[in-house]
Length: 482
Image 1 (cartoon, rainbow, N blue to C red):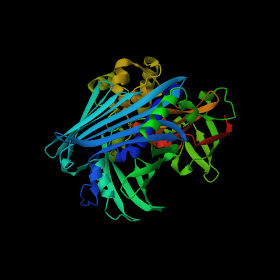
Image 2 (cartoon, rainbow, N blue to C red):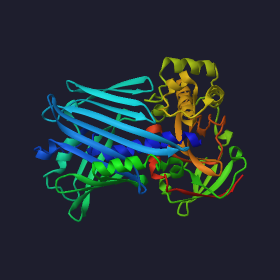
Image 3 (cartoon, rainbow, N blue to C red):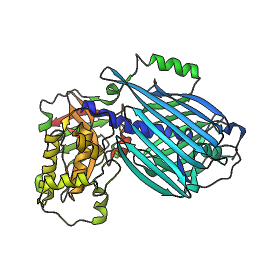
Image 4 (cartoon, rainbow, N blue to C red):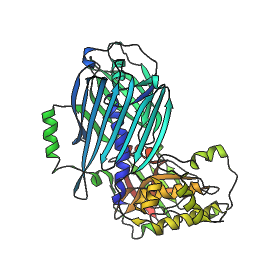
């Protein structure tokens, strides 16, 4: 869906921003190996401005301040991303405040997302626990993590750099609080070499990587991420000037995310088989399945997609490995399938139906008929979607998955590119396990999803951040279809 593209880009942008902000306000939980350090004078007061570029075009800035208060150290970061979509200017603002004691131990923090989405993640120290809460569109989820004594903030990370005699091969492992999931994800930093007088460091997080140049003071002077992102230090004057200019010349998000093709499909939702040639994107990153999506020639990027045969589904609920299917039945931050309202609605829809595929079809039909088709610039929490009953492909997919899981049907999210109006656009749809994985699309009212689409990632919305690797790079040629 053209208008649904924002959540994919925002998911990838937030993770890219986390990579870029790892020296500017990211929260780190535990590190290996630990290194003793002595704070430098430059740790006390920092006021820095940096510009963010995407494929050479200015798209935003980061402003960071760090200093002392009556209660200890305070770190504040404000980031803005500005882009154009459908001839309108949109903004994503990320503001964070972190308060620490005199030894830089975390006391409390708050991260607020505004503009295109509205979300707040806050936390505080309670003894040796870190108590967190995330609020998305009126829905609040709380989580508690043990080991608050091991929490490091960005300044602790910077001091790992400074004066420690880092050399190529040095590696540090961190656990990072990801605001998209309110979970801690693994991150790795490695000194990979030198460039002139600067250290080159690589950070891997959430399936993405960034490359940094670190000067002799331990300050990051340049950073690059997948998707053509670049962050570099600039003066406040330059940032302000670029900010004003972007009001009339912001980056066009659809121009960055749609993939045009020369072959026109007159009835894409009826396509049952399609052969494509993929260029500009690593085929190893594209998932393959036994029945739906497979490479005919991976070296040439030739990919065949075909609609699943219903005969592949054996019918009644099967006893599968509970451990392997457990993640696809469990609630998550946005797919809150354990909510009483979700469970009640799932029971009303499915009733006594015991066949998983027929039950999933009942759910898909209800979601398609019930939800108003409209772009919704917010995070698609399933309970919120159930209440408001409107949205785009993200809302249709999150509600479908929540209802399916509540009904005992293993369900997961697929995301990738779907053909629409002479181009491929980023899109989400669900898949269910009914003896085998079957792709469905309640946004289009499809019991089985058509073949005019490419699955790039599976998993929840946080996993969609890996789409950043494809944005602006993937090319598609339609070889044949039927």
